[in-house]
Image (tube, rainbow, N blue to C red; front, top):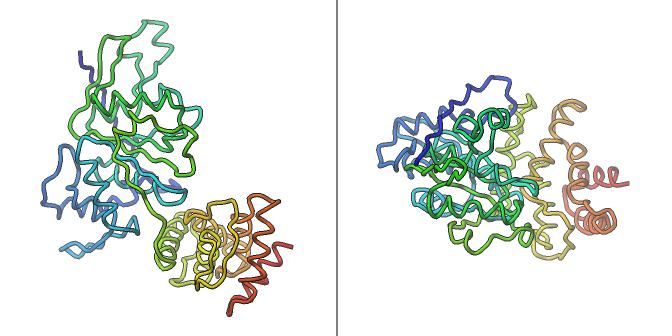
Length: 373
């Protein structure tokens, strides 16, 4: 027999929260979109698919409200992801580290369901109970298996309430635990054999999973599970300008939450960090003239954001508040040199053959040489 799961209401976000959930941080934009959105909405969706895509990609509403972009990339990628969630197929966001898979997943769930917190974090130790359900052992020992003793997982709650569940780093989860999702995604039901009951998914339920390209072969998805997903690959930023925009926007958002100085638009150090990462990642300088060796790390956009944020903190607390080459040099070195034996040689060669000879980069070269010594 079907069993209900009591819905829970998330508490309001206090002002001191370091990183508010997407639905809290961008609540005003979501509310404005809901007012202006007159298009058809799937069951239990807070917004129409068109409005969800607008929320992620940004735009201006008829009333003058400006929706800030949450994802800078191909529009079609977002449209395919949103339309997948409007079907009975789950969504798998696939890409190399730092392509905003988690960020997109969170904002999709916030726009569709108004709640991005129904999350299962995948690790090598994720148990089956994290996806199915667990038990309150005090209740279990006192009364035996009962509805009161059952502890629903985020996936079970999403099924019962018609919400969007999220599974992060799916390929990090052991294969036998991954396959717990097969019945959920194909039959839209979660059996509870101990009670002779089941939870059936109601309209609006769907699931977003993320997986890392670099994790292929760790816990490869079974063909049965892969068929239950529509896979959308999130690419790296196509151009340096797009990557600079992403880094600047995210550093500014993070900086505001940490009370750091604002980042000037077009600041040279952001462009330099992005250029270094792209060239080492691609194995070729931006002018296409010089081949360079690539280090073992991914040098993703997310790592560039971390380097610049760290530099901004250095400049704020130990400098004059202006982001300078010396503030980002240590972060760049730490991101590039992951394997001291091989990566240091790659970095020194790049520093001497490319950075040293580049016009206008002498201050950056000196800062990197000093920190590398």
